[in-house]
Structures are given as C-alpha cells and as structure tokens.
Image (cartoon, rainbow, N blue to C red; front, top):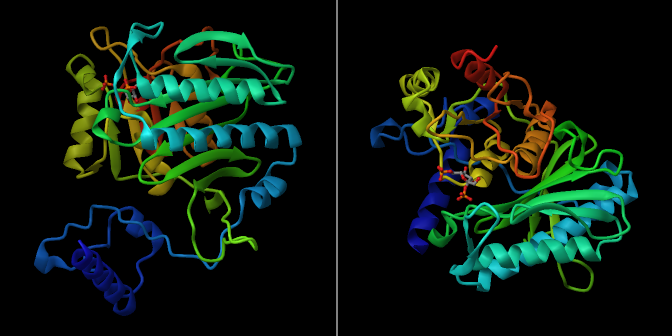
Length: 373
Ligand code: FDP
C-alpha cells in the first residue's frame, strides 16, 4: 500500500513538474489527462476525472464564512445546529453496526439501526435548537411542532438504505423553509437554505449561502487550521462558490429500468454511451448527485414510467439538491413539464417526483429526448 501510494505521488508529482498544465475545464471534461497519468503507452484513457484541487496554505473556518456569506443570524444558527447534527451522525456511523431494526417506517421500508440513530439525532437537534419551529422526517412524514423558532426543517436522516450495509457513501439531506411558507404548500424555491451531508471516508457538507454553494469538511486537520490551544477547527471550508459547468461527460442513470418503457430514456442512455460519457452511479442519491460539486459537472437522471414509478421524494431529496445545484449554475427538470423541480408545489411530505439534475445543457437534453417541452 505504501509503495503504491508513493508511486502515485511520484507519477503525479512528475507530471505536474514536467507536463504543460492542462486547463481546469478540459481536465474536468476528461479531454487531456492522458499524458498526466502515464500516457498512451499504458492505455490510460483520461476518462477518470481525478481531482485537480491543490492544497492551500490555510482554510477559512465555518465562522469566517458564515459571518461573511450569511448575514441573517437566525439562519446562521440553524445551519450550525444542522452541522452539529451531521457531526453527531458521522460519529454514530463509525460505531453502529448496520442491522434491521425490527420495525418499518410509514412507507413500509424496513428501518435500519443507523436510520433510527440518525433520525433521533435530527429530532434532538431540532428540539434543542432555538430557531426551529417544525420538523418533518422521511421516517415519519408528518410536520411536527418542535419549538418556538421560525424554521421548518425537513430531512432524510440517512439516505442510501440499500447500500449502507456495503459500507458505501451515504448522506443526510435537509431542506429549510421559513415561517412565511412552512413546508406544505410551499415550493423548493421558498427554501431559506439547504444542506447535504456526505458520509464517506470524510464527512463533507454542502450548504447554500448568499452567493452560492459552499462545502465544509468535518474533522480535517490541514496545516494552518490548528487553533492556539492545539485543537482544530471542526469545520473548514473546503470548496467555495462551487460551479457546475453547462456541459458534462459524467452520467448517473437512475431508475434505468424505466428505459424499457420510455423510448426517450433509452435514446438518452444510448447517446451517453455512443458519446463515450463516463458512468458514475452508486445507487445512493447523495454520492450520485454530490459528485457534480466535486467534479464540477455531471447529470443525474431519474425519469419514471408506469412499471417503474417515482421513488425520489420532492421535499427532502429533490428540493435540497435542486436548491444547491441551481445555486451552483446547474439546472433541474421535474421530469413532467420540463420546468425546474423547485417550482413544484409540495402537497405532502412524502410526495414523489421524477428528476433530472446537473449540468444545464444535459438537463435540456433530458427534456428534449423525453419530449417534455
Ligand atoms: P435507498 O432506497 O437506498 O435509500 O431514495 C432512496 C434511494 O436509495 C436513493 O438514494 C437512490 O437514488 C434510489 O433510492 C435508488 O433506487 P433503486 O434502488 O430503485 O435503484
């Protein structure tokens, strides 16, 4: 392992020292990495989209960013409260085994030990927050009063029930609405902010702030982030004002079984294949869409059909991700009218929706091939 790691460092170091620097976009679009990673002689295809993020001397703390990019102190507070919950879920996932809980949630899905733990953490966070008024969870899709605050928080505590036993990345999705609208009857556009936590080898959380989508990393200890007392900033800003390019070469085709009945979806997948896009799909919505923020491109498609109906939830899956993707320059489709999923009225906590989300031109292509406009 050590040898392999140092070899990779050596190859990467050599490449950056001696190769002409590839423009960030062409590398992100998979057009010019062939030489960087060993060259044609080894058959490297240049389609793997390795990171091009370089180490910084220091990183802004959560406080620095919130004070500058989120002037509303109550909104700052709810973001902090939700980040605390994500930190607690991170710690819980380290020690909990994945087992069946012996109960089912309201949808009849088997509940897992980790779902229950994460959900309890979210309820506790909302109840103890000074700014939360109502909460609604995937596990119990009723809007419940929790306090005297003003925000309505709607969440999926741990998405990825079918992959968490395999130790794949899973996540928490949180949409936050104000008291003027609450949740029911509102749309995704009414969100005050949204957070998406991704639990993998690291925990990273996307947060929507005044001028864009930011990523915070939990418990990392890079140089420059040690506090005077020797401890570390719990959250550092690892990406700021993230942009999702209009075009992409990465596709995540969810509900692929619908292609049997929806000829436009079959044609779309055929397009991805003939144009040699790169498939990146895990079956977990959070990692599958989150990659658009690390690779700065991508499209996730989840159309539906009679035999393969909608599974994704509008309020706590499509809305938070839609909010963050559109803030980053991406686009969404509701899979019916071809309009933004953020315009769809939320009639119930567990309302389902088809979805396409990601690079704008690819969402347009989805609408075109599925004849939604
Ligand atoms: P899961 O049931 O594992 O929690 O909405 C739930 C979800 O996962 C999404 O994360 C994922 O995109 C989708 O379901 C996968 O559905 P299929 O298992 O039907 O492919």
